[in-house]
Length: 239
Image 1: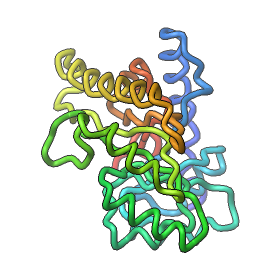
Image 2: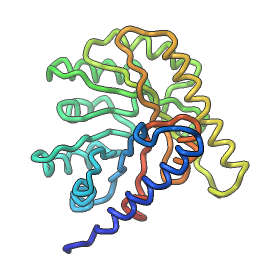
Image 3: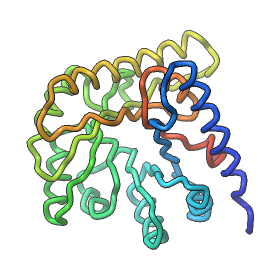
Image 4: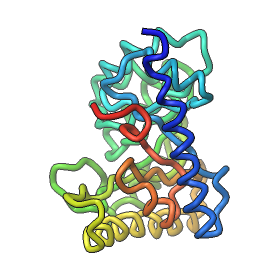
């Protein structure tokens, strides 16, 4: 249906306005903030509409869904981000085209990415996912082992570590100050890890991106230093 996803333009505008307000309050430059439009479960038409409004970065959680959508946009400039859990047996399918993998949380996974990237002749940009909320159901490296993991992965020629990613604790009430402070702590811990790793000046590591903040908490994430937001429902609507 023509115009079915016209609302995306207004949603993107509202998000950018909110980002600008938060940045102004914390003396940050909104141009430093990257928006990853989380397009999981939404069809290619919705992605195409967002592309028409100059949204170039899209995040998918599942490899199967990403592989179904990717061929439809090969004639357009688009950056695909894999933001969900990645199984080693699926790595080979996305390495040739993925712009960035946000969910590297083990040496085993990094080894597989490096191996497949070497076959393809590419160097894959990766973020290390850290479990700062301590929730068992979430993937991610234990914060205390993150520096060690980054050092190990830095030895791989076909991976470029570009930063860190985390998922804040899910809030039952997004307006509850106590819950928001817990999420803030999750983000603050990642920022501190980010700065610690940056200070080590590890060869082959470029600590550029802090991927944290989603629809419910991206304002907190910006306040705590995020420069890469993964926003889904605020752009595309409820799933």
